[in-house]
Amino acid sequence: MRPILLSGHERALTQIKFNPDGDLLFSVAKDQQICVWYSHNGERLGVYKGHQGAIWTVDVDPTSTFIASGSADNTIRLWEIKTGRCLKTWDFLTAVKRVEFSEDGRQLLGVTEKRMGHLGTIVVLNITPDVDAEQSDEREMTIVCGESKATVAGWSYLNKYIIAGHEDGSVSQYDGKTGELLDNVPLHDLQVTDLQWSPDRTYFITASKDKTARLTAARNLEPLKKYTADTPLNSACITPKKDFVILGGGQAAMDVTTTAARQGKFEARFYHKIFVDEIGRVRGHFGPLNSVAAHPTGKGYASGGEDGYVRVHHFDKGYFDFMYEVERERQNRL
Amino acid sequence: MASKNRDWADDDEGDEVTVELPPPQTIQNKDGTKTTITYRYNEEGQKVKTTRRIRLVTHREVVNPRVAERKTWAKFGVPEKEKDSPGPQMDTTSIGENIIFRLSTNWRQDTKDEAKDPNANAMKDKLKDKTVKCRICNGEHFTARCPYKDTMAPVGAEGAAGDVAAGMGDDLSAAQQGGPAGKKGSYVPPALRNSGGAAGEKMGGNKYGERDDFATLRVTNVSEMAEEGELRDMFERFGRVTRVFLAKDRETGLAKGFAFISFADRGDAVKACSKMDGYGFKHLILRVEFAKKAA
Image 1 (tube, each protein chain N blue to C red):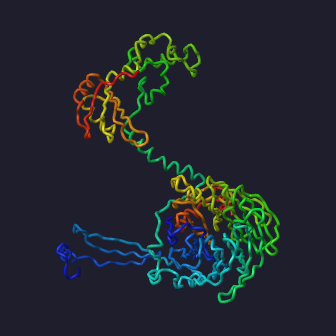
Image 2 (cartoon, rainbow over the protein chains, first blue to last red):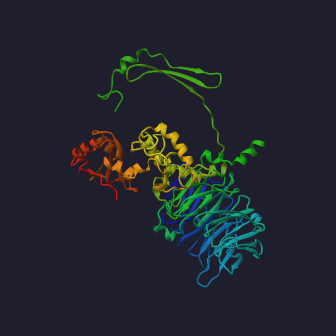
Image 3 (spheres, rainbow over the protein chains, first blue to last red):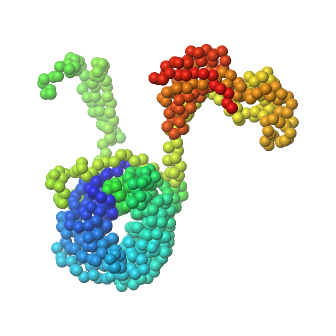
């Protein structure tokens, strides 16, 4: 497996995301620009310029027409993927830490930071799925997180719930229409750093600073699996096609200079989704992994690190052939 | 250089010998493969027949039309230079080194084994031509593991030197009779071991120490780069060397600068001591003296 190294950013990566077809890879970093790459060969298609602060988050709409980005310049921006044109800017009072399109692409949620006397909120915006249409300025809904600010959030299946991870390690379930808090479960001991969905959005994986990642059902927040690592985690994703999860993390960014690369645990860790065993690691970054993303077809994954590199991996045959003994037996019986 | 003006360095014999080559053949096989046979002369002027079997497979890949369309998009927001040139750019995209990524339930163990391997192999190589020989019964095990170590004196030490084979029978019975402690597995202080018998004769001194120090040389001012093998080669000229010990730093693996050489015969040791003292070895002058007995 020879990874493709993308070095389009000058500062630490914050999030990377594949579009639903998996041919484009979006990367955002603290250097104020968004890059889009062809995932098969690592060619850069374009750069979206306009943000005035570090960009924390990016998301692609289901039709690969728009991307939305959230930045420390207190804005969410909507861009046309093809041309790099900025279509809309929504201004907020504080930095935007997370954006995500709903399953149908008609709504966009944003998580705003708690700062300067403002409480952390989750806002929902309506999106008109037309490049030339005027986007509405109005907030469809605002959920205020009084107790502990939300760090990540996402839409469940059919936009039924909004699931949010909080700074105190708890995960809440809000009604997708009314914004009413339905449930709050203390899943983690420390801050939730990432939340990514299964392909059908019925369950999700959360990564946390408490060195664990958890698989949880969206319907009732029932804990399904727990993956324990030996380092704080920054990101986790579920691989399609094979039943694995990928966790990324490493020594906290501020401690990196005092740590050797070998001891920093800057590796992507593969766990079996069902059996919860760690089954392999991929090294390569020389800083913590800030974001991992699985290719939507399951044939590869990408990781973005504090070192400013994105590494795109296409799996070898051995990856797809790997099976537990019980899985193989079952396959033989069928 | 153009083909007409041949380089003077080119071999121009080719023109003469290419006369009688049979024409290349192509045969269509029944199983869908093609066999091509070609002839050529190799560098030594010998005729070489090359037979190739070729199977042509058409591999068709269906690409999502949306994906195909996106591949034709024009670049934007990138530097001018990058905009005009298709394909990945050198300054933003590179290929990383190959990563061996093998999934396994016990990957942790696997990687550990790999890490250990080089050392283990090096050790194996070192020990390849050394045979383990017990000092007590001459068997192929370490002296410490010898089943007779409590009951027999080492070969060569006075007393038990006599005959090993006969000794073994005695030993077994001796073991059964046991020391004062009775049971074989329990610890018996050396002083009480083998009560009676040969013990008295050994009282004279430390059996191992005396024997070793008797013909052991201490070599100092040894180069960092020295290897035990080199020392052995140098000293073997004077007689049979039973043991070479070169002190090495545990972490760096470099020699610490001193070594001990044990000879089988003290006469050889004396000779070696006089000859090798002051011998130049790897830019340093060796200092050789008889080892002092350990305190």
